[in-house]
Image (cartoon, rainbow, N blue to C red; front, side, top):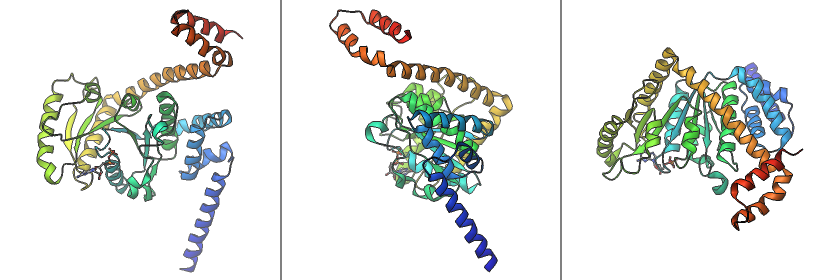
Length: 350
Ligand code: GDP
C-alpha cells in the first residue's frame, strides 16, 4: 500500500515537473518532439502554440517539430463536423467524443473559425461548452487559431493535425462554423465530412448550400428528441430524397441521412458505425489513401499561394507603394493591371 502511494506520488511529481518544463519559455525542440511522441499534452500544446505564433523563430522551430512528427502521423481518422451556429456542434462533439473515448480511442478536437479573429473565438473558445470532454484524459481540445486569413488559420489547423496524430490521437475531429468558405477548407483536410442539420419549420431543404450537401459523407439531423422527434423523422426522409438528385461520389460512397440527439446521446453509436464502414470500404478500395494524397497535393499548392502572398504584402517596397498605387487606380490615373504589374516588378527587384 505504502509502496503504491510512493510510486503514485513519484509519478505525480515527475509529471508535474515535466509539465512545468514544457511551460518554460523555450523548451528545446528535441524535448518537445520526444514529449509529443510520448503523448504528453503539455508538449503538444506548447508545439501547437509555436505553430500558431507569428514569430519567425517559433515558426522555424515548429517546422522542425512537424518534420519529425510527420513519420509518426497519418494513422488517425480525420472527421470534419459542420453545421450552422446553434445546430448543436459542440454538444454533439461532446457526446460523440465521449462515446469514442469510452471505446478506448484518443480524441483530439480542433477547429477552424475564420471569424474568431473578429469575435475572439466564437467556437470552442468557450470550453465550458464541452465540460465532460475537457476533463477526459483521452481527449485534447484546442480552439481555433486566430489569423488574418482563412488560409493561415487553415494551415495552422492542418499542421496541428500532424502533431496530434504523432501524439497518438486516433480520431481527429475538426469543427467549423458552418458559414462561408471554412467548410471547403475543412473538407480538404479530413477523411470524412459530417453535416449536422436541424429539422426546420416545414421546409427542410430551404437554405441548404448545394456545395455543402455535396461534400457531406453523412448528414445527421440533430435534436431528434422530445417534440422534435416526429419532425426529425420527416426531415430524414426529405433529405434522403434530395440526396438522390445528386451525382454519386467519386469513391462510390452513397451519403446517408441519420438522426441523433446530442443531449440524450441517442443515435451516436450509429454515426460511428457509418464512419467505420466508410473508412473500411475506402481503405479496401484504396480511395482512402488516394484522397489523402490528393489533399497533400492541394495543400502544397495552397501553402505556396499563401506564403507568396504573405511575402508580397510584407515586402517593404510593396508596403511603401501599395497605398499610393491603390489611390491612383481609384482615381482612374492608372489601370489596376498596370498597377499590379508595376508592383510585381518592384517586388522582384533585389
Ligand atoms: P453549436 O453552436 O452548433 O455549437 O451548438 P451548441 O452545441 O452550442 O447547441 C446549441 C443549443 O442547442 C444549446 O442550447 C444546446 O443545449 C442545444 N442542443 C444541442 N444538441 C441538442 C439536442 O440533441 N437536443 C436538444 N433538444 N437540444 C440540443
